[in-house]
Image (tube, rainbow, N blue to C red):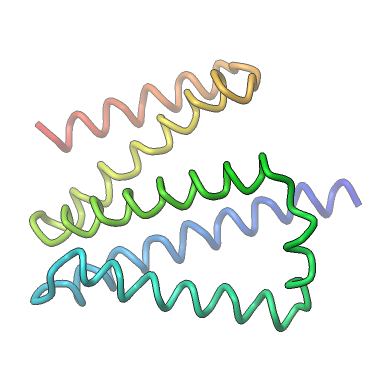
Length: 144
């Protein structure tokens, strides 16, 4: 079972990267003649419907009552951060070249690594530091 879980996180992470890459191109194409905030709102409605459909189809809606206040708080804060990220990303895509915006947006990986060390107390590894530095250098190269 441990091997299965180890492999599955990687599969889901790769699928996430695939869909995120597709999302960026689809947004850039769709938002050309649309206010970026309106485009984000429309996109969010689709995500909302899709997510709740999956919850109801899988029969998990009854678990809402069991969610602790701390989890609700952090899920809410995560939703706010996601919304702000999407608003900024969509505006950046509307104004800039997709290849540059997408690349700079992936600096979020470095932010996530740093926050994992600080907030979640994860172990700092040399691979994470080197990877983070390479992403930072790549981001700076794309910006300047």
